[in-house]
Structures are given as structure tokens and as C-alpha cells.
Length: 114
Image (cartoon, rainbow, N blue to C red; front, side):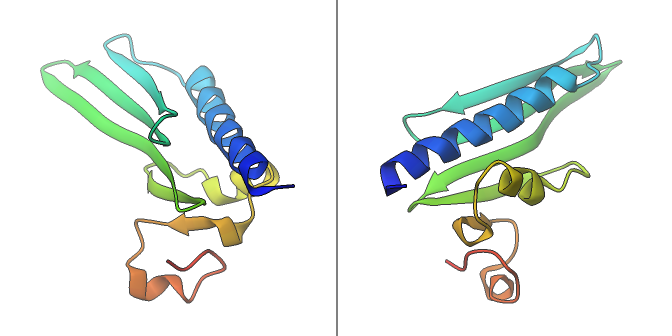
């Protein structure tokens, strides 16, 4: 598969994963689960926004970027093993960067080192 088709497949996998998450989410009546897909800049987020009583909720659940032909997992505030999910959808661990791990620690993982 050429790199352009591979990146297209990566975009689709991320969007499918996030859409499935949002669709299966048990949503509070007072909060919205927002899916943001910026395909021009290759940024993909799921946010929990609203109110829980008198407390304001604005929380990033997932954040992915595609930069330099790699899928960057910038945020995962769930118990979901998102790397395994994406790998099952055809994204190699060598093309995933765990952005929330310090760069000095990345070399000790099975993921891309950038």
C-alpha cells in the first residue's frame, strides 16, 4: 500500500474508532460528547462538555494527530487500550507515537520514536 493510501486508511480508522466510542457512550443529559474531526490539519478529538449540577465540565477524552506520517496518541482519558484498537484496524505500532509519554521514554516501547 502506498503512503497516501495508508494515511487515508489511518484517518478512516481514527474516525471510525472515535465515532464508535461516541455512539456507545452513555451520555449525561447535561453534557455533550463532541467529536471534532479536522481533516485539513489531521486533528481528531472527543470532548465532554456541559454541566454536572453546578460544576462546569470541559474534558478531553481522546486527542489524536497525524503528523509526519505517524498517528500521535496525544490523550487517552479512558481505560481503553487505544493502541490495540488501532492496531486491529490496521495501524502498525511503528506508526503510532504515544505523545503523552516523555520523548526519552519512547525508545523503551514498541511504538514509534520521534
